[in-house]
Length: 277
Length: 302
Image (cartoon, rainbow over the protein chains, first blue to last red):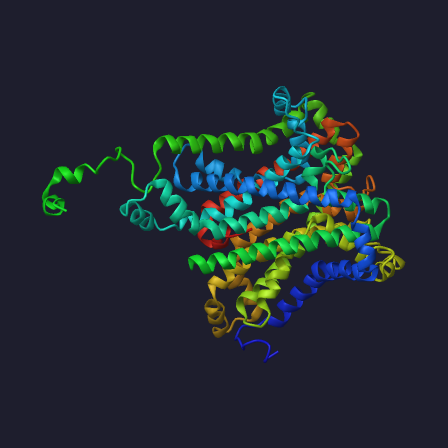
């Protein structure tokens, strides 16, 4: 232990790290190892043939595509919301600020049935959309709305503290040097915010890809059209096709991991380019 | 260039900044743009956040408050509420103890592999709840080695309450630890070391120095953890087996009622959970406004 950690006068390292490692092992490490071990048992060939069917590809493509589009929308909307909430004064600002966390506090199943009631063809907003010839619920558009809902707070909450710490003098300097407000925003403010924006984007994307509760009600769950990957895992389990479920789960983990790695790489390059932390 | 000579003493020039409308500084947007952005934000929030929230209560009360309350008397609804409370009563304190232990070890001691450990603690946030549920089924299912042993000893884990608690702990795992680690790192070791120097025992130091220092952050983490624990759907749906009246939590019962075309019952249970969410949100905002300084992590979380 002495080699492993620097000596400290405080007691309790053994007890605290013991509790930590025990709970961490039972709750997180062992279950994930069990999944990967099962994947190893099944073997790469069988995993691939379980994944390589039109229905699985369609589900994976749908999950990642819609999650990406929802995260892109939340990137813009979240930036606008964070800017409005931290820079402008208007009545009810604090209330709105608190309400942004609603998707974190509202259970996903509750959000799911509420969005469905609202956006179904006979719902309050769905009927307006139907008049304009747009079908929302039971289409990929409905899934997109559910994922925008669950991912909404991520970008706002990662960007807000960075906006609060922005140095106004830098903006003043930019204005003094003759830049208009728009140019200052694109060339000075946005680069400073971009690491936080990307972090929020990655969190919203990861959440959206794995989301289940809020989506299954509004999706309609038509195979190859509106069937998301997590739902297909549940269906495979209900068919007692455990190997099929494991294959989809491992594919999801692999794609998510690659995506997050790519985003981290962009972050590193970004940091190198602008030299900020 | 000529201006330079004139301007410092010329009050009329100081009072009138060139070509800029009154009340607007160079570091803000024109008024029309500000109003547009505020209105656009409010409109989108109304459609995406407030309308669904209202819809829950409107649907629950569509046949009057009487039939809403009546639907809560259903024995299935009762057992769902009870199971959700039991689940949270196990999962939240266990995660709080874990969070305290993890924060103590990570924030107050230096050791190798810390960053990796923090990554592991954060892992549940980037794993789909359904995949998490699947992991528990594979590890503790009756067909697995460990699961088979538990079943043989009369303690089934999957399709029973222990599995629901474990799956709930997985999805709420990072909440308390992530809230405590930064705040305890910031507070350093000096106060604890002083307590020890003055002769306090380890437990006394923890109770009288550490715990009071982090109490608001702990409460904050527990609140978020509890809201998620009571509302978890995907992970619990997979491990619970959805046995009506036995392993059906409130969110699962909502789904059952909804699929059985009992909208009032579904939305009334949903309204209960939504109320819990609103109370959580209010308490959380209160903590942020009152004790923002002791929640340095609040702004950086998630």
